[in-house]
Image (cartoon, rainbow, N blue to C red; front, side):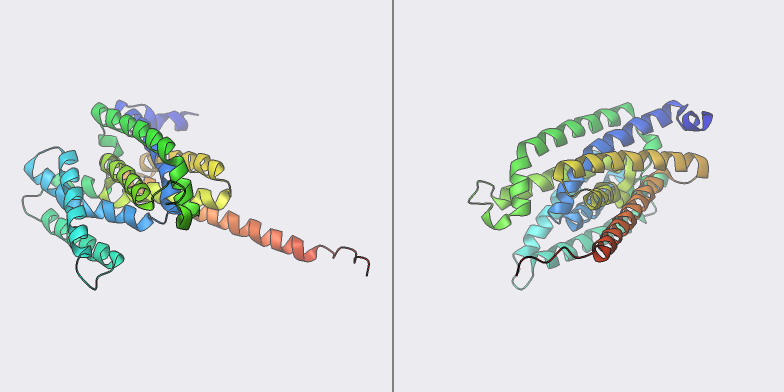
Length: 287
């Protein structure tokens, strides 16, 4: 059984294991609400929009968190400004703004002054997390738990009956702001381990898989959390034994899990349909 423990014999891999488990606990439940509210594109937009701030932070030698916050603020301001222009829809404003910011971040990343380890910003490195990163991720787990617990009723109403949400005491704008705030905080904290380009995979893929495997909200949240943790742990094993980048391996594991869940859901649906077709019709009623 040494193959189970060998990848985590060193302190840095033990920290990586704790990090991905904590991120799974945070991303699993949050992802269910993100998918239910159709904010998957928003999750990607937030991650890509903060890239210039992250790159500038790396170039200036300041904490990445500060750069990420600045990048988020710039993205929010740019999107809000673009939405005020006549003839531009919200989706159009977001798409144009995020594309511009991502391109700007890529241009800055190609600067000759860019640090050699800038790739970690884009693709992450769970093996580089520190004790301070673990504390930040633990705080994120607490924030997600409190935020979702306090907003659960509003999220459910706005997600399943948006037309009546305001009359039921769940203003969609406030709910949207709360969810996007939690999403931004998660993206900001997870960048160190998963990178700017890959963090969305751990938020969306396990949740999408869970919603295929369970039709009940509580069950979907539990399954999504378990699958997010599984994605992280499987990615670390793949990184150790296949000698591949850990962040990319985690993201790929999450996608593979979604594909398997989709196939299982399709097989179950097909089998159920065949059983219903093969079932003989019931006796005719009195006529």
